[in-house]
Structure formats: C-alpha cells, structure tokens
Amino acid sequence: MERTVPTSGNEDIALYIRTYYSLLRSSREVPIRAVAEAHMRSNSALHVKANEDAIDMSAFFYGIMRLPDCFLRHVNLVVMGQSSPVFQENGYPDIEDWTEVTAPARRRRSFFDGKRRLGVYIASRSDIDDLIPILAAYQIEYDKLNAILGQTATKDLLLKGIAEGLTPDLLISIAEISGLELSDLKKLQRAWGCETAANLLHIAKVPCTISVQLLAGSFVHYKRATRRWWQGISAKCNNIDFSASPIYFISSNTHSLANLVSGYSRSIEHDLVEFIKQEESGELLNLLQEQEANVATCRNRDNLLYYTLKKFESKYPKSVQDRLNAEVKIGFRRINNPHFLDLEAQVMEVKSLLPEKLDARLNIPDREKLSASDALIINIDYPLGMAAYQILSEISRNISQIKGVFIMGKAATLNGRIGDVMIPDVVHDEHSSNTYLLKNHFSADDIVPHLTYGAVLDNQKAITVPGTYLQNHEYMSVFYREGYTDLEMEAGPYLSCVYELIRPRRYPQNEIVNLQKADFPIGILHYASDTPFSKGENLGSRNLSFDGIESTYATTIAILQAIIDEESKWKRVNRKVEVTPRKEAQVLPAT
Image (cartoon, rainbow, N blue to C red; front, side, top):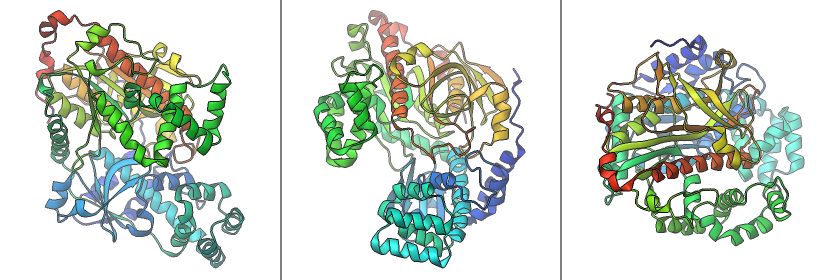
C-alpha cells in the first residue's frame, strides 16, 4: 500500500544530510567548517540563533553536555569507527589503550589519545546524524564566544577568576563587559565548576578547528559490530540457552527496571532519607516534607527513593557495589561488551521476579504461573536511531520466540509539556519513509494511576526523526498539520524490525504498513523531554528533574505489569505445545 502522508518537504534538511555524508566519503579528515553553511541554512529548531551574531548558549551547552570534558581544550580531530577491529584495520591498533572518556549526557564509547584525537565508536548511521550537527553547532557557537570574549578587559577578569576564584560579583562583571547573559554564564559554571574561568579564557585565546574522519561506513560494518556485541553478551550468559527461550524485549534505560524488581532502595530507605535531610535542599527536601506531612498531592515515596539513590551513589560511589550485589541475588544480570557497542544489556528470568522485592505498585495475579515461566526479559539501554533496528534484528535471530516488544524512551512533544507521556498508535519513520499502524498494548489507563502531575496522551501519532538537530519549524509544522505531535528517534527502526518478525520479507520503503495483527504485544511509551515549538526549550536549557522520574517509572511499571499479565495467562501444563516458534519468526533476516 502506498503512503499518503506527505513528506516534510524541507530540502534544507535533506541538503544538510547529503552534504556531510558526501564529505565523509573522503579518506582524509574533513574540517567541520565545511558543513557549517549547510548547518546554518537548515534552521534547526535546536539551534535557533545559528545565523545570528548573538550567542546561542542552549545550543553550545547542548554540545558540551554531549562531548567529553577533554574536548574543549584538547581535541581537534574526531575519528569515527564501528568497533576496535575497524580502528585497528585503519591504522589505530591501540585505540582502547587510549584514555576512555565519557560525556555527561550521551552514551557513546570514546577514547582520547592525550594529544588531539578522539576515537568514537558508532553503532549506526544515526550516530553520524547525531554527532556531526552537534560538532557543527559547537564550532559555530565557539567562534562567536571566541570573538565576544577576546577583548583584553574580559581576559583580565578571567585571569582574576583563575587566580582568586570566579565569585558572583566577578561573574556579573564578566557578563556586563562581554555582553553575555548572566544566566548563560551561570549555566556554564554549573557544568564546568572550578574550571569555568580557565575554560572561558581558553575559548577567548584559542580558535577552535574541529575535523572529522569516518573510517568505515558500510552497512556490513554496522551489522558486524552488532553481531559481535550480541555474541559477547550471550557468551557471558553461558548457562542460558537463548535459542530455546521465549523473550520479552524491552528498550528503556539501565536503572528503572532494576529498581522496580530489586527492592534495594526500600532496603536502605533510612539512609536515603537521612541523606536528603543532611545533604540536600530544595526539591528533594520539599518532596520529603510533603510526604511526611501527608499532603494529598505528594509524590510517590518509591519514586523519591529511586531519584535520591542516584544522587546518593554520586556522593558515595562505594555504595554502588551494594546495589549491584542486591541485583545479582535476585538473578538480575547487567552485561556489557565494551569492544563494540556502548549498550548495557540486562537479563532476568521471569520466574525470578519476587513479590516481596517488587515495587508495591506492581500486581502478580497468579504467582504459581509466574514461578513456572520459562521466559526471559532482555532489557537494553535504549540505542540511538537505526541502531535499534540492528540490535532487535540480531537478538531476534538468536532466540526461539519474541513474546513482546516494549519500547520506552524520551521524545519531543508538539502539543504537551515536559514530563507528559505520549502513547502512539501511528508512527511515521523518516528512515524508511514508512508509516506504521499498530495496536499499542498500552492506553492512558495503564499510566494515569502512577502519575501525580503530567498528562497522558494516548492515540497519538509519532514521527521518528533522523537526528535531534535535523528538524526545524517548517519540518515540524508539516507533520503537525497532519496530527503528528510526538517526535523521537527509535520507534520507526524498531517497527521496521517487527515487520520482519511477522512478514516473510525485508521491511518496505515509502508505504503504509499495518502491524495491528502482530501475534505478540507491541507497546510504545514516550515521555516528553523537549518542547521544540518553544524556541530554545530543550535539554540544553533545562533538565527533566523529578517530572522525568515520575514519567519514567510510570511507563516502566506499565511495561513490567504487561509482562507479568502476559505470563499469567499461559497454561503451563501444555506449554511445550503452545509455545512453538511462529513460522514468521524463521524468515531470513534483512541484509
């Protein structure tokens, strides 16, 4: 069936993508300035001041939060490859002997050679669509800051800040002389801490010249990296026969499912409450006081403990091992294969779910049936874009049966607020140009009981975009007029793989695809992290805070409850007869 939904019609975005892919075909490094003009012409909704002389601090801050700390003062060449063998084949035999570095807000394995080069592992072309615009925006805004901070008076103030500390009064003086917003400088100070003055002086004195190089870009290289990632994961579960196990697949994060099943936060509740009282102020303390005062609208106690746990472990990193030990005791495994994709996989047997450990909001209707289950839960730290297709395809080829596909992740909303939950039953995928129709396993009724604030919007239409920067107001307006309000990056690739699980051929292109008769549940839940129609309002300008925690756990509870309910339906006596793999699951994988 041919699709009737119009394309975005935005040639500037398409031109931008064609520009950097054509440049990356070069065998040598390419200066990022070569794509700057195309980047500015795209009028990205995430970079609203790209064409202005004024600094766009949200865009610059978005970049520094997604690049390692070493990047600012040291790196001027970014080398991209799919795995350590790809780097070795292209003259980087010791890539993993370099210093491994991380970014605060992006999961991507990166290595710094101590001089000028940053080696980055990419899982799919979506990593390129993410990284190149981030670097372009960073370069553009760095150049502006270099000019703004370059005057002698500003440099003198920054030197004073290095020598004596960047006091509030000194920060005000820098803002007045440079013309920068004081709020923008405070935002950088929160990110950089005591290095703020030194970093700003470096920007004032040293021009930025970033180059990039792509070592290998073929589809085969991505597939090979994904296959080796899964081989490493399965090898570490040598007592599990994945080829004989029915699987519930979840794409979410590394913390919410573990917290719901382990009971660890409740076991150290006293320590967490004392931590709030002694170490914290503001939001957490207010939430705790509301609970202790029995305020009618107070937030869920467990959510508060989960939220506090992360801050507690940041303060006391040795306590992390205690949590991991508690997870191991209930059969919850965390597995990484660091030489390939930077994606943690978590594996747990459904029969290991213990009612006394589970979050109290979960209900087990038939404990005996659950205890007799032979199903596994595989949860992966949600990937970026097309890596989702690669991963679900690889896992599906190596198991006996998919019993459910559940996807939870962040999205931008065109009609809601940050913290709202969107439940789509239509997904348009810009990668394949397909529009997928699905019977979403979830409705608002599954989420509303677990939210104190925030709306739940079901029967929505989602669009899977190629990258966070690769959208502008013209692009979004076209889809908004067609009723698409949920912008994200993974649902489309996942559904392309689901198509191949239930149909005997590779996913099509440019069609309307009906997945409503899939013989396993498909559930997609998105919580809003951005409101792109509010210019500059993105994760570069604010954090999700506790609203994000509420949405995260409301959606994860719904997913885990769905698995429990599905398993409780099975008649265990005839299990071997009833659970024979479907013929559709045996079709040849995509090539």
